Structure formats: C-alpha cells, structure tokens
Length: 146
Image 1 (cartoon, rainbow, N blue to C red):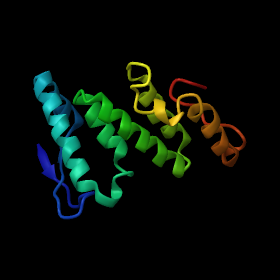
Image 2 (cartoon, rainbow, N blue to C red):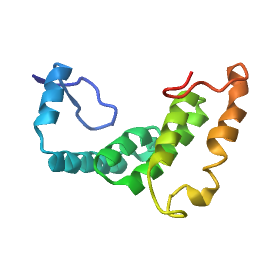
Image 3 (spheres, helix red, strand yellow):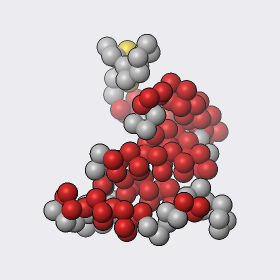
C-alpha cells in the first residue's frame, strides 16, 4: 500500500508514496488534529533543514506545512518567499496566490511580517502589473478571478 519511489527530490533521502490517494486521505483523516499539526510541523522543520540551496524552490511546501501546523507567523514568511520565487520565474498566478494567502493572515497593525516592507499596497497591484507585459500586457487571473 506504501511504495518507495525510485528517486527523491532531495539527494541522499528516500521518498514514499501511497498506492492510491484515497488511502492517503483515509490515513490523514484518521490522525487526530493535534497529531496532524505536530506532523506538519515536523515536515516543515525537515524541509527547512534539508532544502539548502533549494529553499526558495520549496518555500511553498514549507509554507503549507507551517500553515497546517498552526505556525502563522513563519508561514507568512515562507508564503512571501514562495511568492517572490514565483515572480522570478513569471508564474504570476502562483505568485498572486502565495502573496494573497500571506496577506490573509490576521494580526495587529504593524505586526504583520510584510507590513514593514511596504508591501501590502504595492505588490499585488504594482509589482504584478510590472511583470504582466511579458504576458500580453495583462496579469493572469488569480484564484477565483477571471
């Protein structure tokens, strides 16, 4: 039911996969929520420790696990990194998704990790638009927008 993959995305490690996504979903749903949070925290810690030069490349994975672990402040920082990485490769839809998720986290004024960078008002409007000319002069629609 669980198989080792022939190759791994991380050198010197082994990866495993479930034979079927329904089996994976069932295993996930049977874990208690507090256990899930702990598992997601461990995965995020492992990814941070082992990503090395690929940290920006896996920032989205790290952010997702931090979100699910309930570590909002760290998740926002990695969502920002993932958004920056997506902008660098002109993946505008993905960039917008990461950046909007980062902005969606609640917090006190001035406490949001991206408030101090002047990012809130500029990134989604100005920065994404600056990248848009490579895509026919229009920014790609983000999730739920057309």
